[in-house]
Image 1 (cartoon, one colour):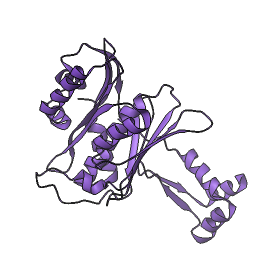
Image 2 (image 1 turned 180 degrees about the vertical axis):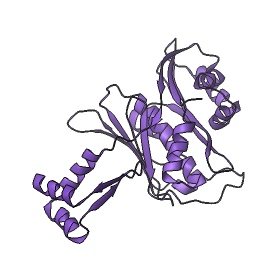
Image 3 (image 1 turned 90 degrees about the vertical axis):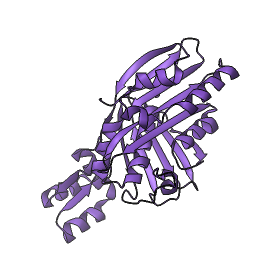
Image 4 (image 1 turned 135 degrees about the vertical axis):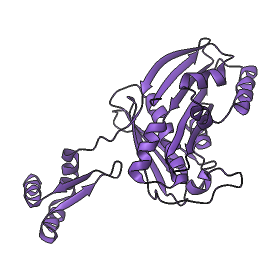
Length: 292
């Protein structure tokens, strides 16, 4: 199954739902960053959240940055997404790992930590970006994103994010869903949703069984009349380029580039999101100096 996301709404306007399958993009991120099993789960959940959150933005030029800083061994997790299904991410310490929990599950909360904040920065083309922030609840990512929406948007949401890591440490299944409650919903409907979530399998287990995002919505919200409003393909995609890296070198200033020329006669710049290496030889650096 290819990675994709669906957006739906109850015909009565009581809730909206987003569901995504992200197995391939999480596996791509794992192979790029060579993440430990628990870091794969933490980064994968964050990438899934970023992809869903990015899809909510209105304009093609809008950019979302999601930063999770919990004080745990993995350090900061940073995700960047647009509204076209492209997402990329990194973790400060992708090799960090911690023992599994007593129930055998990966201890994402311990790896991420919960002494910190989750921050969203949305560059919407305005003078100043929109910033939302809330304290981490558990470091498990899903609960933390739900709390962010409640605190910064006053938007009650059920958020589930899951990554199943296989025995060979590859990503076997990944995905997530957001259910956002709208003002028209009543307590009885909320109780029905909560009960359904409680008895349903985990989102990664559903995807591992072959359920599609549409199937997941049906599993969770079969009692509601949901219209699927849009479908969007998802990709791990970095938008770095040689020209962008050249501009970064220019921004370092004349002395810094002169020192590179003097000491090494070349420069190598690595993109932290995709590990692409950009080489600049003596002639390249000399031309950059002319442009500074």
